Image (cartoon, rainbow, N blue to C red; front, side, top):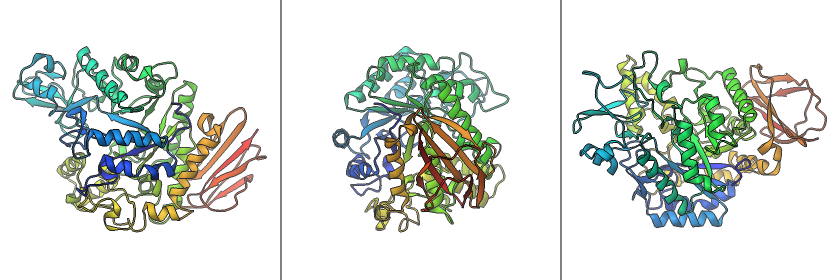
Length: 549
């Protein structure tokens, strides 16, 4: 499948649509909403894990890769979803978690029962005297090693202690993974997103990290490219219609050239998260600061230029199931909700790469601003609420940070209409619905021509209509302007110019290039916008101009 002009829609099934009223979304719920997704215009849906799981990390702790957790439905439901999606020309991308399994997985159970074959499926080490093997910190807080009293050794878990890291050095582990991928390919799946896949190659020697949290030893590890090339060759590489994307944690651009390089035979594209750390104080997720706009622009510009120079390809996104809602984060969800949501959407969709829309982003869903710890569900948030208080913060201060940073911000139920529970369920939702669902929902926005939803439909249409959006080169402009992010996209035949104001104040810019021949094809201010030598942009304005050479 050509992926340059495609748009992918991410579904977090637990919160998408519930058909059996148990308060949890399900596979049938996705099938029921396929016509809506067709209306939006997307090409493929990425569904986060729905495999059998104890749900300690919302399904990213997989206990059985071949079967569907009954909470989401049955294999028959999945096969029906696949068939109905195909009828509408919509592909299905599955989320594969191969850095670790749940400790409930049969492999792990066999490992701790003394089966040497399966012990070698994981990373078990002896302690360092009284201490764990290393001082590495888990991504969810605390040490990254857990003691197994059954074996008298520690196992590595870069995430929750119920998520034991797999030993990719073992060829038998890799063979099992190829079998899983091929199983789902035979079910008609035509895309795979690989969770934290750049962490699968661990170092030859495990040592303490005295200057960081350990990630420098296992991120983009020594054999990562070898492992990905082998995975490609043995599974999806045989089918050119399959789109693959790797989630790359704390990666480097140089590695991403290889992960997604045209002739590298690894993956179609990569997610990186550098642009979503610009509001982390001292790069600490749990410390707040206003976002650094210059840093945001520098990251976008360097990745756009670097990836195109090296034939790499990026997955473009603001939101996912792990990130706060972008309109609450970089926009203004109180005073300029609609306008700032449209501006942010435009900036991402006009860049070089494949855009991903996370459920609810297309209607401008906001953070829920939960103010009681009992409203939070995420293991990371609950852990960090205690960690922050242990560091001396008051409950109120810790809560303010959770309101901004919690992964639950993006996991609240999809807002379909103004009925009870936003039309998500007739039961009691597993997590609270946001208070503003009567104003922000799909039903209202379908009716409103000027809605964020109908604007997103235009963004998708433009990518299909103008080749310059899918294939053009990016040329950064106005790189040091304090309020404006501006760039061109160019091919031999076309040019696109995008000008956006990231702030709620009026600003202006003098253009230092020939402005003849540009036609305004999109804006969020409903004005007949002409390209002038001096452009004045009101709060959160964005404009897209097109020119045929």
